Amino acid sequence: MIISSKKDFTEIEIDRIIEMAWEDRTPFEAIKFQFGLNESDVKVIMKKELKFSSYKLWRKRVENCKTKHLAKRAEGIDRFKCKLQRAITNNKISKR
Image 1 (cartoon, rainbow, N blue to C red):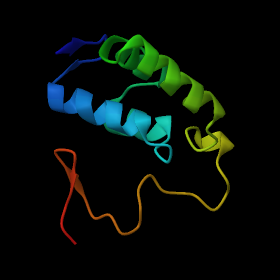
Image 2: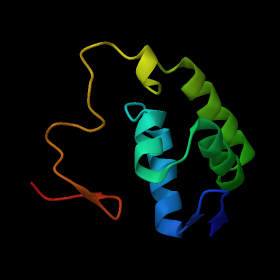
Image 3: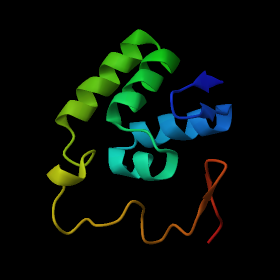
Image 4: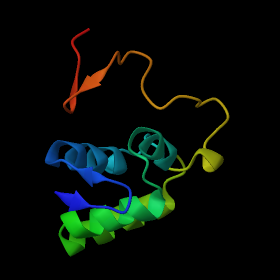
């Protein structure tokens, strides 16, 4: 379990945060909305939970990714998830 100044996260929550951080389409604002973590908090979790080489690769991707920050996104993208996706439960997309 990771101890944050905001709250303690379960392993399932940590896995979901890492998954959302790796996804190019998921902005940091979505992680903040769902878990209350800002970008620097996510960086701390990623650095602690990933191998250092994986963390470096992730940071490089995030710096060059225009979709990880809402301010850098194209105007047509205004949602956190695919319109076909109904709900996410325990890191699995519900059946359609």
